[in-house]
Length: 326
Image 1 (cartoon, helix red, strand yellow):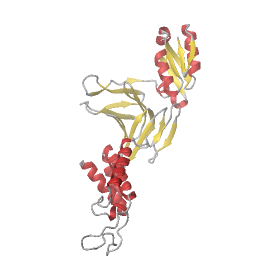
Image 2: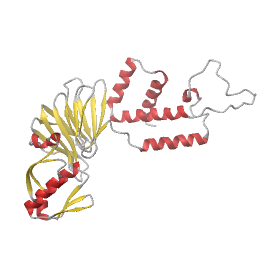
Image 3: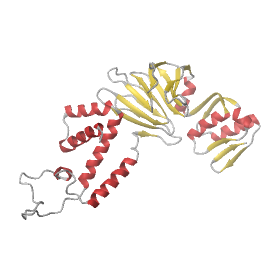
């Protein structure tokens, strides 16, 4: 068992046995916030204790002198479940242990549900505990882990925009794999994409960096964007140079729109496919490379396909759950 798991088990037992006072809770919060792995280890430890508590009591077994090992403790009851067991698992039968192990393995194999999530085509706005605002775009997942001295968020997938409540003493940091974006009081969006992680700043500025890049954090100011990605073939990560962005276009999704400013038909179709279960597939080469300017509602896949087909003299057809431009 790793050191993290040892500490997590100790915290779980301490919390379960008698609760924590204000000082103890603050210490636990600080430990949970110090490393993203701590939270998962603590949840696993709590799950183990829950399974042990649910195990049946030991059968009464007489020892060699005829004494009943199941007799009550002269000092009085010591609680239930694992707190009553010498060495925890001593009274548990092999079948029970096997069932507990199987249940725990199944629990650990399943990823924990995100704190906040959206489905394909859905957008959601949430007010966080510190007063910050998070807006989740389509098919996104966000975890939030606040402690006394830190505000850590993990974007598992998708895209989110944050308006951060100012608190210099508690850095606000968004983690996306090896990419980290830190702010104290500002507004910015983070998008997880195939090419890397897009960061666009709408207010103030943020610092962004990538684990293993070997460089200083990149400052991104209002109206700027940056793509942070892993350099192919090297195993190391490096940020891409900052660039000016059209913030109104980049955050058009917050108004339920897709903004196009020179994207090809293929790139535009990929954007529509983020929001809709009915997917656009472009077969026509001219339509795939045709560059477009304008705004569409995110659910106007059919209207977009019709417009593109008219501009490129292509045809549109339905094939199951696909819109095919050929």
